[in-house]
Amino acid sequence: MDKLVIEGGSALSGTVRVSGAKNASLPALAASLLTGDELRLDNVPDVRDVSTLLQLLSDLGCRAERLGRHRWALSTTKILSHEAPWELVRKMRASVLVLGPLVARHGHARVSLPGGCAIGARPIDRHLDGLERLGAEIKLEHGYIEARADRLRGAEVTFEDATVTGTENVMMAACLARGTTVLRNAAREPEVVDLAQLLITMGARIDGHGTRTIIIEGVDELHGAEHAIIADRIEAGTLLIAAAITGGRVTLEGVEPAHLEAVLARLRQVGLELECGKRWMRLGNGRPLRAHDMVTEPYPGFPTDLQAQYMVLMTQAGGVSRISEQIFEHRFMHVPELERMGAAIALSGHVATIEGPTPLTGAEVTASDLRASACLVLAGLAARGTTVVHRVYHLDRGYEQLESKLAALGARIERMR
Image (tube, rainbow, N blue to C red; front, top):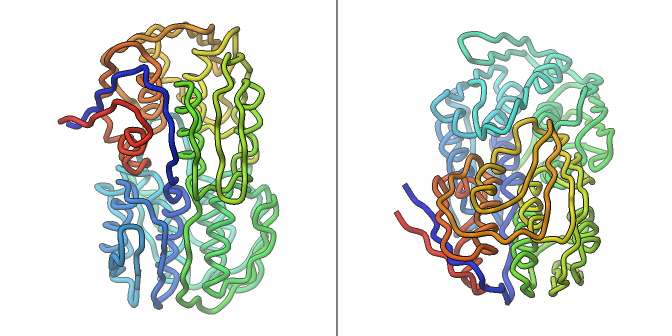
């Protein structure tokens, strides 16, 4: 099993291009099930979650041809299977995104209840409630979701809580429903907007994406399209924090600063120098770092997917900071590993209190989930001595060759088996 070996103490410096967004690529790939025409996607990151979904799509009848490292052509002339099996869905929760497209176009879907990172309950009842409102008959049997509908029909769907994949799943299904669908309390994340723009290019009629209310006028069929996936705002934030924690100066290319406004505002409050332009941003050395509280919130708030990385930064900031995790109940599993490296962190419910600055020392640590993996890599960059991060297959699910990008910026990091 792969591990990363990191020698800390090197300030990062240079320019790096940010990969396409994993969380935008997955629903875009699932959208290929909505049409029999060819869908071409560019800027798709080469990560394990993408490979998992491509395997699932192939089993369902999609023909995927790789046109380049980050470019794919997908064609689902005929759906050959309506089942997404446990063996694949257990690897990645986002596999449930095939549910809406399958029932909308095929009239039948059988999808295993999902697995994925153990960071807390992420119930899909909001997906199911939405599809039921559109007229699907839903049954839960033997660990599988069974959905059937002759043709979905438009309806008003109000999500109890804003849900990204729930919004995406129901929005895709509604594109082929008869009549008008209104999604209220919809997720506003850039990845949702990116999917809506792809669907519009495919012939869907969607308005209000990026707001709490999305309106979809159903059409009889969608057609092929070409679409470039947006940059990964979580990778961009991770790289910015990596530069900040090492006292480095790094320029990111191919990014959209507007997607990171809450993160950039908080980094400036911490004392970091930031410049932003069209499709680029630059972080300079703003030490000494100042402790600052943070609360994770749905977009446009501070993303939960950067909470663990921000916590590492706070271990190096002067003063006491409090991080409140409002999205997932088990997203502090990286704390014991940081404490092994010398961090001073106290947990009380959903709040972590960090005292800093605290010198970190290298240690053998184990990643519990995708973002915790990145957190421990960043801690290793800041630590004195050697850090070994085990179970980095979590990292490979969502970051494209992160260690290579860090090494190109001057980090002493190596992958070993």
